[in-house]
Image 1 (cartoon, rainbow, N blue to C red):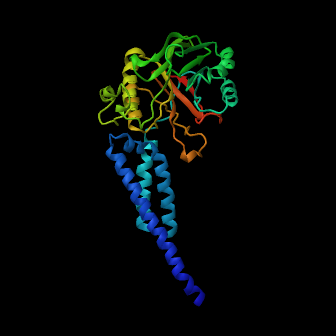
Image 2 (tube, helix red, strand yellow):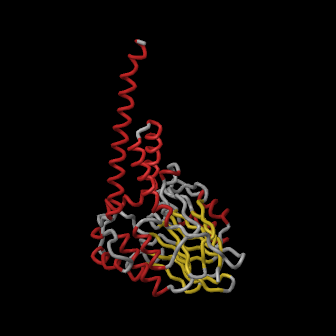
Image 3 (spheres, helix red, strand yellow):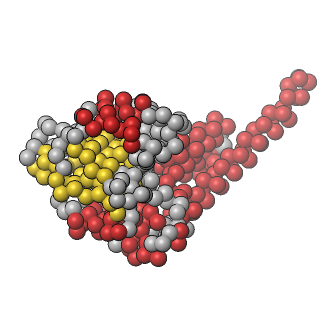
Length: 343
């Protein structure tokens, strides 16, 4: 009896400590959810929406702990937060695409990473993918000598390395590239590389691009003054960021210069449920019905990674499968997509 009584205060203190922790977690998560719903324009606050998946996982784990401890009020609150935080992650996905032809166009998008310590695994992975078209991001001068093995397998390529020192985007293709496009969008950003290819006799436009990170404010560049006007092309109330300005300008460029069947790939530095990307998809008609894959940073486990590398399609083109490729020297996993045709 004495021994049991001696242990009781310790158990009470232990349970009380976990209860306080659960209330604290619930409060922080509720504040994050309120901020996401509010939709702040400040990039440092708006970036919370990118982490909806991770916040939802934290809420779920806390709800399980509350259930084990039988703290019912906290369990109900944390379960509700799990649902509301996770809802944007999965609500945008539609039904599986129905295609009318068996042929598939294989696409790989890879951020090579300017700080990569090596090159061999990346080149091997790209060659082994046997993709029809490869889009490369962060193809810096240090990377370019190592890309030579790809040129034999992909004789058609387009880039703007010789014209713009900031150009690090490249498109490689087994198919001939017509009407090539490489450089800044209307003398601004983002930078794109691509053109028109003929797949099964049909012309389609394929472009690779790279957006700025969401934390970069509009006033952090010479073009910052125009970003707010550019983002309005997508929607009102987007974050005041360089990324939103890029997305708006790129959307206008696509609508005017690349109508019809289109594939866009690259590091968009945004999750598919973020406000900027949802507005971009709604405005352009680009989408990925096969879902998303957590691609960055590759050195962290899956729950901590973000899905910021994408392959999107519109018109008669539809993404039928989408997955991460093997680990390479990059801090991004390459992403692999198959594109089908629908009437």
